[in-house]
Amino acid sequence: MPEPAKPGILDRFRTRYSWFDHVMRAQQRYQDSKGDFYAAGITYFTIFALFPLLMVAFSIAGFVLASQPDLLAEVTDKIKSTVSGDLGQQLVELMDSAIESRTSVGVIGLATAAWAGLGWMANLREALSQMWGLLRQEPPGFLRTKLSDVIAMLGLFGAITVTVVLSALGNSGLMKQIVEWAGLQDLPGMSIVLRVASIVVSILVSWLLFTWMIARLPRESITFRSSARAGLMVAIAFEVFKLVASIYLKSVVTGPAGATFGPVLGLMVFAYITARLILFATAWAATAGENPEAMPVNPPPAAQITPRMQVREGLGPAGAVGAAAIGALGALGLSRLARRR
Image (cartoon, rainbow, N blue to C red):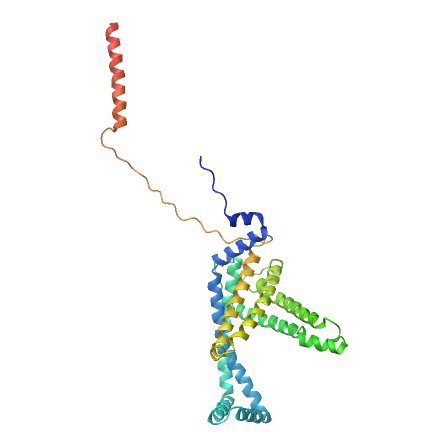
């Protein structure tokens, strides 16, 4: 009897270490829910939404410059002194035309930003819902869905605003000013303490933001208990990734090609990796022990019953042998009966 096959190294590790089994289950959930596909969609809408936001920023700058002639004159003189010749004059004329069309640029930018933002939010919410295994059988109407996305987008912007304010309060520069105001700047190791405190505050702020995203952005409400640890995990990974991304940008913007394409490629990679981190953390939360809800199990495919009919013509070898044996026994029995008579 053959011996049963031994489990592979991954199976042994999953049996021995519960955390490794959890990571593998999260990875399986991420793959089954098409996490890379949704991360690419989130990245596309993120980059696409930047252009209308830039239009809005230019419009706001136009309104500010139009209302402050002294500032406009200072900016014009700065451009002419920095860029001489016809190019400088062309830049000034371009700025003047942008100021004149600031209203139309702002309206078009706001409308396009709203459309791109709703697409981004819808893709993000659908991706998070898929990671949780929340497959809607009957989606709500179009207006109700868009209204829900608008509310979620406003809530996300509010959460981002709070995190930005908290990050500014925890900025090392501001903390350094507070330390100098308190007269503690000469203490040994104070720079290291400020750096560590800044990182800790950044992680805490990111933790709050990611926990809120994982728990509240899916189509169905999810408790914070299953999202808190996942939010902390992605916050730490996000802080490490920001450090690596800053090193990357410093290394690629030194040359002309890097200065032209490096920031754009860096932004795309940053958005894609961030989306993957959030989606994987959501899958990790969805497969946690305190959240045993699994993906819906699809019914097995329909069974096909194929009857087999085997037709044999005449007696086969086994039938011939059996018939000969029966005939011999019958002849032997008849001969004995004849002798007795």
